[in-house]
Amino acid sequence: MRSISRPISILPTFSEEKPRFRVLSSIDGGLVLAALLLATVGLATVHSASSEMVTDYLPRQLAWVGVGVVLLLIAMTIDYHVLLDFSLVLYGMGLVSLVAVLFFGVKRGGARCWFELGPWQVQPSEFAKLATALFLARFLAGLNRRVLDFKQIAAAVSLVALPMLLIVVEPDMGGAAMFVPLIVGMLLIAGVRVRLLLVASLLVVLFGAGVWSFGMKPYQRQRVVTFLQPDTDPLGAGYQVRQSKIAVGSGELLGKGYMQGTQSQLRFLPARHTDFILSVLAEEWGFLGVATVIGLYILYIVSAARVAMRARDRAGILLVSGLLSVFCFHVLYNSSMVVGFLPITGIPLPFLSYGGSFTLFNFLATGMILGVDLRRYVNR
Image (cartoon, rainbow, N blue to C red; front, side):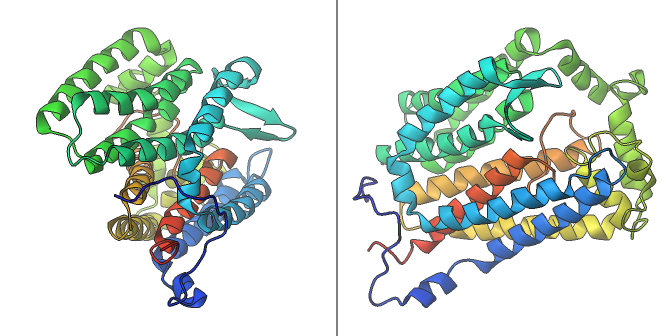
């Protein structure tokens, strides 16, 4: 396998036989198109969802998307092997930021997850997730084995468990849960035996029982109970999911029209510009609108999977697979949550939900994936 360590060069170097314009044209356009169209739909929906609120979040989200596009281009330009070489430093910085937010972060909704920078708030867990993905990809690629043994798997899990536990302490159970698809996706690609998967499943059950008993706040347990029996608290913890179902169902086939949804415009639906933005979209644009967005997500996933399959080294395959696993889990969980199939957690919808840190994470991750695709023809 090709060694990950290499001379540092931020700008890509193109082989003479491949002109620059041909290399750029080789990038999967479906991935770029899906990301930009989803972000555009998100801007329109955020404006509709927040139009009757004290603050219209469209200008802020537009600024985040603008910064995100710039970061996408930067991440695509930087050789991902350089990022892998610095992954230990980035991983350490991520851990430091997660510790620092426990002491110096602002507290909202019972969790201390954000740094406040003037009018902006930054969530370090999103950037720790990227750093962990890079470091884990480097670690697993360096093993260069078809099937990992127990010690190697345990070491990989430990790398992910450390930032997860720090995020649990905040507490942000939704943010911590996003590290699970990251490690699972990478380990499956790296190679694990079936019996180890069974042992891991048992450990996950035991860990879940421990989190339920000692790691969850009462309101978090109530969310799970409400998911199992929503009618037990229709005006309390069950209110949000009931309003979300009403919004989704009332959209029918074609929806009520842009900014015409009663659940969002009359403020019945909480968290409508963040976690439940898909409910707003369903009410206003109906089944066809949701199907269009799901189609864009499928285009993104298929394009990213294609990048992973044609990546030129093991590290590139692992990095794309890990980032794509997180993306898929976000889409599946959020879309299931808004129709009551899964308990309510703070897991937003990629490119659509309002949120600066999460928006930047999505664009940075997309830029890294495009960077892996770009380097099929560079640094040979």
